[in-house]
Image 1 (cartoon, helix red, strand yellow):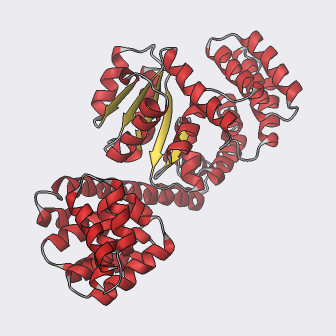
Image 2: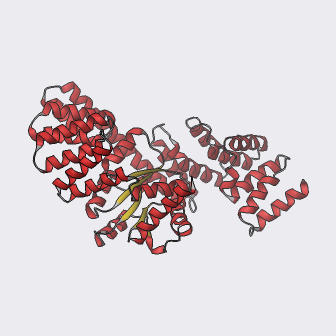
Image 3: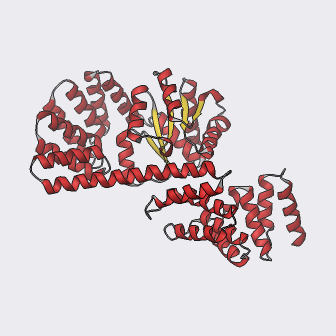
Length: 444
């Protein structure tokens, strides 16, 4: 990233904080909280009062109730939103309209992205994320970049205040700069709608829909207009288009089903209702799986047997549809099994996930540790070499990782010096790392 860009990003975050803006996290991910602190405290030198961290949703709601006019950027972890995420975001925006929401997620596809943005997220972060990328996301969430973005933001503020005429003028300025701006047409449409000029509003929304095929807002406005004017055919047309782009909104699918059954299309209506049931079952399974995984994390340090039970339950609830987001659960399960000396079972679990998510260096590293504990050093070495081939920076992720890699190399009769050195450099005060490094130097 160019220095000028870095400075602009840092200035945007700094200015926001100095103007009274604050940053809030709702997550149990300690690593991500440290990353936020790294950006705010160490990189920008902001006071510690600018950042508030929570793990409970009720605490966040209490904060927003206390200060409804405050300006917050909330980093909201999907797994920490105990209820329906859409309802959580709606409550947050109702309590504190000036808030900006960044949703944290372990993975996201195009349909989930469309749904989250539609539900109210101002930005998305897929973990893991680097310090530089997080700072960039934060700056772009806080302050619109460029004149056009600032005009759009101004137009939305005028609409929120019911200033229809002024919003119309701003929309014209936007369209002068960019004649096919979907946002410009949307602002004009909303202004006309505010003035009860529905025919003109419809025309503007049609323009916006033609300008951006993947822009949901004009399609939603058109569906609302046709519902209001009593035109179910056109309403259904736009609801279907919305469902093609963002097929995970259960309320919209129910609306389509209701319209279809009213028209006598029972087969199409049933298709919609079955689609809703499928999504609901997946959401329920995901919620139970996430809850089981969190319980396993709580139990891991003190009760490995309980951690094993809940980890397995979390994975079983996925129904074989394992994804990258399940790796943390698999690692908890593997570590808990290894603590009980069940290294073969741990390897079986790692293999199960590697069959679905191949070439994951973290899983390979943990499998190497399991082989090492079973004293199968050749397989431990082969697995750790595969992990290093995929991710040469693996030893840099922690002193214990570097130390364990070095130990496997050493047990295999090879030099572990470069890995012990990395471990020692990450913590020069750790005597075990120092002794391993000196021993490897002597052996070399």
